[in-house]
Image 1 (cartoon, rainbow, N blue to C red):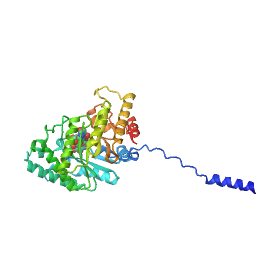
Image 2 (image 1 turned 90 degrees about the vertical axis):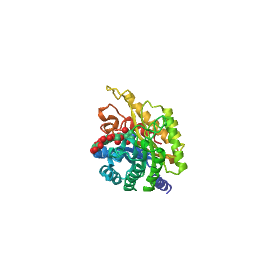
Image 3 (image 1 turned 180 degrees about the horizontal axis):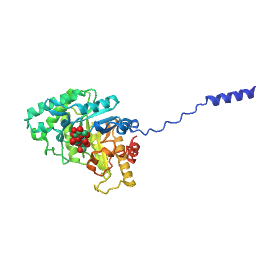
Image 4 (image 1 turned 90 degrees about the horizontal axis):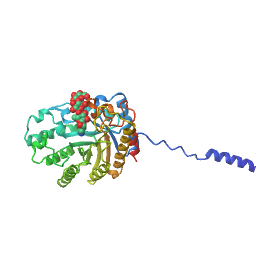
Length: 347
Ligand code: G3I
């Protein structure tokens, strides 16, 4: 009897032994590993085939590369071309992607019919308010965030004046921008409102002016929720500046968006440049460093990291046949070492 009991017990115990399930493979999908938005700038005309599947597989949010800019939408004072922006927002809504609106006010994107009108400040502002109300209310509930203003400062911290309609029209441009942030808040109380610019981590004077504007907005009561740093850099960009600059931006307490990330490798812009294995690894290391540095920010301030494009084939940096390889996917949409570097940087 005893032998039978022993054999029966051991059989049961073997059958009932809890064998731990194998740990799921660590995810290699950026949007699944990240605890914040993983974005890509997209062109609506390209959203098909491998381009589309790459966006849907790896990214959780998208930014319109040009479809949601003033010159694309606002074709006349009472004429709006919604087709491009609608196509992109509909794609995102259908596929469960967030949309980051880019950008309501950018000196490069005021349409010619508007700038040629030479409106006085009152007319300028009243017409811009009508535009903001029309665009922001149209996409209310479909967009989670907006770049309200883009690139209003020079790297030396002065207000951009050259070719800037706002600077030309207003004695106090910052007050105008502040009122526009309020117009956007009124049109969509739920959207997060960003100021976006480039060279913020490497141009301390520009960063100081941005922080001064944030303080002024807070003191006056103009709403602002976040700061975007475009991050159009290279494998040679100083890592100490990246870390100190990004952490300095975070001292505002605002959401931080690495909003247009791409990393040049052909730093001499040589027309015989070859993307060597060494440079591929340098690019991977640089992406990893930027993502690790972003991960070091306070959790509640990490909004998203957005790459400015999906594949090297369609980057703004390769327009005009320039030789460059700035993004995470190559011209055939294969993951590059840069993708692996980005993934390793995520916690
Ligand atoms: O306008 C045509 C449109 O009619 C046509 O149907 C469409 C078809 O593809 O192309 C449009 O052409 C160009 C568009 O890019 C799409 O390639 C526009 O003429 C051209 O001006 C536009 O350039 C964009 C540029 O901003 C100006 O809006 C770039 O793609 C985009 O990468 C660039 O992005 C900027 C950010 O907004 C701000 N930070 C710097 C960054 C790079 O310059």
